[in-house]
Length: 137
Image 1 (spheres, one colour):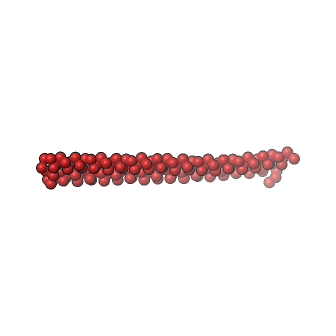
Image 2 (cartoon, rainbow, N blue to C red):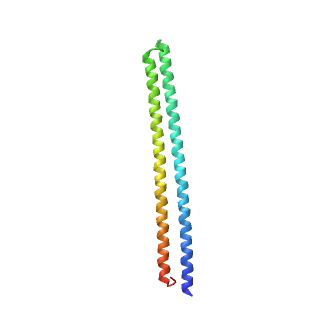
Image 3 (cartoon, helix red, strand yellow):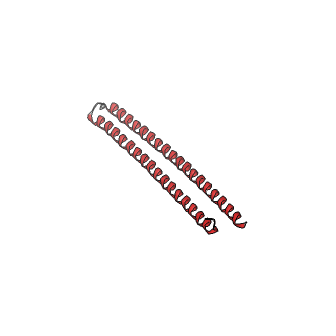
């Protein structure tokens, strides 16, 4: 009779462990998604800041050119073109960093998923070995 009781406890423990493992994996996925959302928001803010800074610098350059009578000069036009080029490079860099962050996040999540599957397989194997020791199998 005590073997049946032990088997029931063992089975219940395994079910509980598997359930908690799944819950932990789900929470880890939620946390990873929230972290990615935060990174996306930061990237959007950085991009907006770059756009704003470039607009201010462009306006200052154009106003300065107007004030000095060189608005249509190649120097002023070159400065404005340089600002636009720098803005494009900065925004491209921010986009690359954001995409890299997403890739890293995805890889870490896959690693956590594989780790969870390995832990699950280990639990099932351990339970199987324990059941084998009971003489039922």
